[in-house]
Length: 388
Image 1 (cartoon, one colour):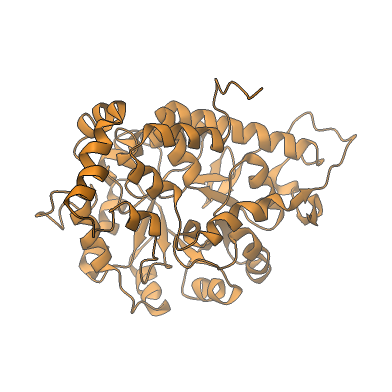
Image 2 (image 1 turned 180 degrees about the horizontal axis):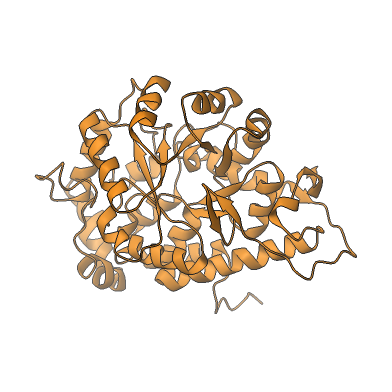
């Protein structure tokens, strides 16, 4: 007899609810990857191959999951990753996520292409959040957005470097998000799909307005839809960017600088030499170059290269507190999670993200206790037996 599925617990549970609640094109935007989605699947499956090493009969009566990320104490070695367009998945989703992150004691990373602006998210509380930015062709926009971020209390900048060109995401193409659909196709993907999801239509489609990229509205005043904003953003991605541009960025950003999107020790080393305080080992959630290594498999070599020199985080494929434990064992100071919180906010709003983070914490406590670790700093490669 199948499980009743009355109470969502895991990322997979929230994913199933989000799939039911969202119009197809929006769900596939969260859920999909590049090309055949090989790397997307590998990100998850490679975690599952890492067997924890169980250790018993230790005093684990006081397990503590807290640690420090980017100079700030957090309740769990997790940050909510930047997720573009998230305000289309739930009403003012980035605001709900900020509230949830505050309650969980972890940072939210606001995307450049969020629906809610820096200023709207900052109004939630005085607790700082992180901001993610791309190198745009218009350096004046980059400079102004950094000034805006600093002005609302952001002190950690996550700078994405793996988007010199946009990966081919075939689900978006098939659903018409990337353009190319005829009139009937646009009707099916738009109004007809919205009408078949009435709760989303009322809560997000109507009550969740305005559906604009809040951080960019000053720079694209003629845009009236998310698609028009997307076109402007994609035209602004700069394929000529090099590490010299990161040195320029370091010169104008006074806070912590984390470079997101490296997979090799050489690139990680270049990021630190350019002035970064840390890196995120990432393949953009399998949304850019399909077939590349999973983030967790690339992590150990990067960690070995940068040990003692920089903060090392990773994202891609993290679906549980046990995965957080595994990543920490392989050298990460912490992880970023994107799809899990996007599924949770789409499914249950702020409460869903809070409950998901509570589950992550419980899972990490169990993993630590049954591995003989009581503090995050106790977790090491000795806690993993190796691939199975």
